[in-house]
Length: 303
Image 1 (cartoon, rainbow, N blue to C red):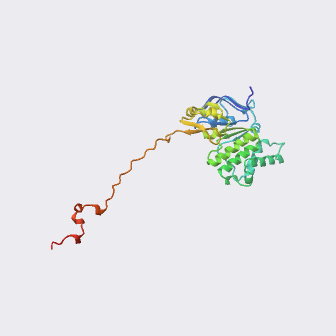
Image 2: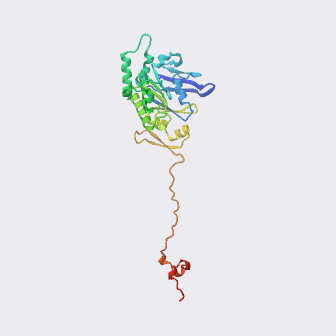
Image 3: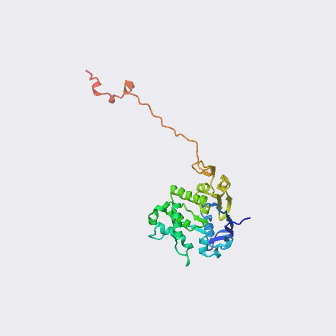
């Protein structure tokens, strides 16, 4: 059996004395677009941080190409694995081109300085993410969607075969969410990169992933293709949500339709008030009209 490039073996993960996950093992399929899903605080981002070398397990180990990732020099890891963390913050006054160029840092050294090849890679990375025309703009002037594309361009400039993204669509409107995920899918399909992302939106995960990992309470509940993982029974098990799962009319991938309290109910029509029909004065019998309502000139004088 061929070992995958990025794996975790029986890892225990947590912060300070609080354990988030224990005895957790996972293999990231090579050349896949793997998405980790699950409810809040289930350990998704914690697992991604461990896979990226940002968090050292208190037990077990994470392996990159068969070697414990924390035993490798940081620069060597950065030449193999790129990371786009949550809420990345750019230095003040930095331009798009300068930020993307920082992706070449792992490839620099005492004997290798900035070269025409580095310049070419930066330009190609900006072109691939659609930010080439923004090269001279300051990053803090850009929209959220544009900034996220710039960060992805920087990760591309690292030229790593593995790219990890922690909630890359957070704080973006729906149009920019789709733009970013389309870009990730394109990188996976056209460049053969292995992508691992944490996403909150289960329908986005089912649409874009080739491999899904579903987590709950610090453990992996299911993994496989979206069709294998995204079922009504599994969604209720993982998220506690009753739903129907239908085919996405655009892609044919699973689409979760929540039941919820707003499920369709029989339409009840409220009773309508009964309006009394108005009767014209001439139809009212004369004797029914009180004397005070009769015009004075119509009353006989008695003469």
